[in-house]
Length: 382
Image 1 (cartoon, rainbow, N blue to C red):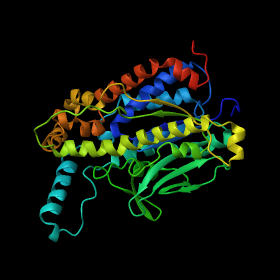
Image 2 (image 1 turned 30 degrees about the vertical axis):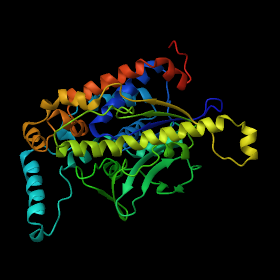
Image 3 (image 1 turned 180 degrees about the vertical axis):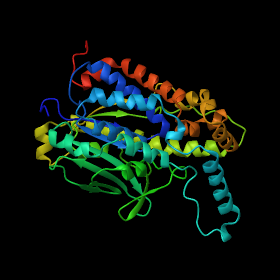
Image 4 (image 1 turned 135 degrees about the vertical axis):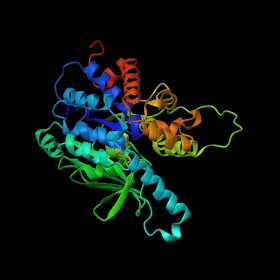
């Protein structure tokens, strides 16, 4: 690490299929960096689908440009069947299980675990990621740390599993824990287990679900892992939309989409606002004054890149790319209508949609080339 520039971290948030936007941002960063070797982000932190992207970058951290190329190929050629089963047996079976539980619960001994079966995602991760490479990259100095955040269904705690340099210590804060672990497929499946949609994953003695749930401080793991500057890539617009008049009762898909947006977006906005206030306060004190007062906090440089367009609106344009039977199922809960497209945007793992998000992420980042170059400590003319 260069003591003058500090250690940079990349924080990738959750959002299901929306995480394709992150890959477009990474493509633009690769373009801005040019052919420079190495890894510009020695600290990688991810949650939900962002945790999968972060871990993939960690696996290939010896060569950032190659890592981005591999991620880009996967996301540009995605189809929903690579993430969850879309065949008739799986979808109809899920419908029967949920219907039986709702209408004949007294006679059903086992409750359904999720709406969708994400066993294809497990197969994809096992096939494409060599988790042993993470420790090898840490030992070689290509990577300082990587973390994946999950949410405990029993404890109610937000837990960041991390692999990193031996100097990094575990942490415990109110409802937030950081613990050292050898990352594997189960950690990624747990972190991306959207409630009700995908099944929880058991790790050690507890079942865990999507890490965005109850994640009060999404940026916190990066700071605990030693970051001095943080690039955050969001999965939705952080600016508030104005209220609009409506006379129709919200559909189940609209309610579900609103709930997921609350889980994936609200915590990040609050945490970034809190960090900005802390930085402003610390900026009023010199380093000597902070030391004399026993203030252990330090200013953290932060750059946030988030979509310039509504991703749910983009999803609405690509709804027909889903398999016909899945479209029928989603139509039943209102996800194929305009007001239900938020839910659709989290599940639309189809290349027409993911490519559109990647293109948006690429253009949004190039539009902020000078800011990105300054954050990466590059000559802005590169």
